[in-house]
Length: 150
Image (cartoon, rainbow, N blue to C red; front, side, top):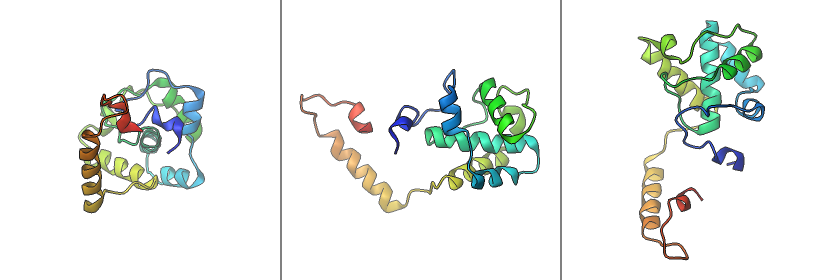
């Protein structure tokens, strides 16, 4: 994993301000990703899939429909996709009553970026590793949550 992504790993929401670097790094798409995005029927769903792809790339998590989306991000995505920016603060109105569509877009983003469900043997390995780590003290004798990230 790139060091630049560690700052965003696991975030559940967007940073208050997205820099040009963040917009370019996480919300600019390859030709393959563009084909996936352009395969959606409506302009709003194209924007939604692009938003999910970028958020998963940035945080490693799915974006729920109730999180605030910065206006600058809507503008950036709209410019990339040649679509007028929506007048939405969140995705809630887009997915209102369509939870299966939200789940479809989240799954599509995960799969497009190469994420796969964890196999049972992988889950057991991670759990065992975390249990061992819990009992290992750092050099100064203090357990640190930050050591879990390293």
